[in-house]
Image 1 (cartoon, rainbow, N blue to C red):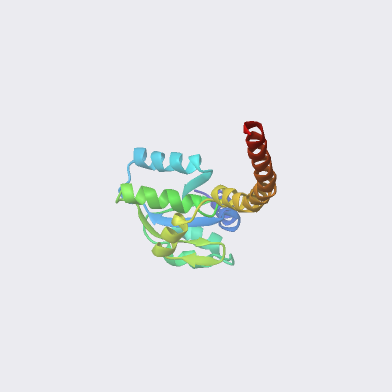
Image 2: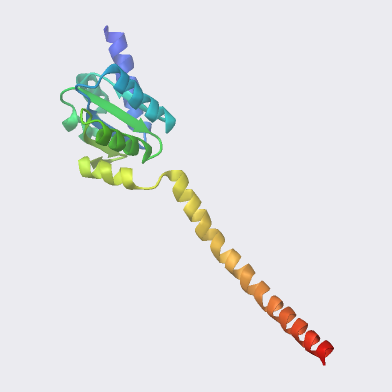
Length: 172
């Protein structure tokens, strides 16, 4: 790899570290090519990506970035998983590490916040952005449907009382 290629890799990694909602760092020693392809496919399914890069180049890319604390995790065979959705990469990596012991999560970063292994697992347990939006929309819509039901209820009560009175008058 010549100097120009290395500079390109450093720029790409820098963009990944700046623009991603979450970055998870893991050791992948022992993973087969098929297992790595499976991990990449799972990440693509959630609009995330997996990137393997030399630790030295990743350390250069992290200099001056808000998540520079990731440099402490960069030793051995490391892989980066990242996504714009703050929970997607963490969720996939957590699930995959439970299924395949060869993948060991080291930590990660969510914006400026450094995450240890427990932090990555906590982020993985959070609902996704879409799930949060749906629950917020449900909370916003619930009072309106309750109000509509409350307004409509007295009218239906009056109508049932009138029909009962009418039935009694006809029976008498």
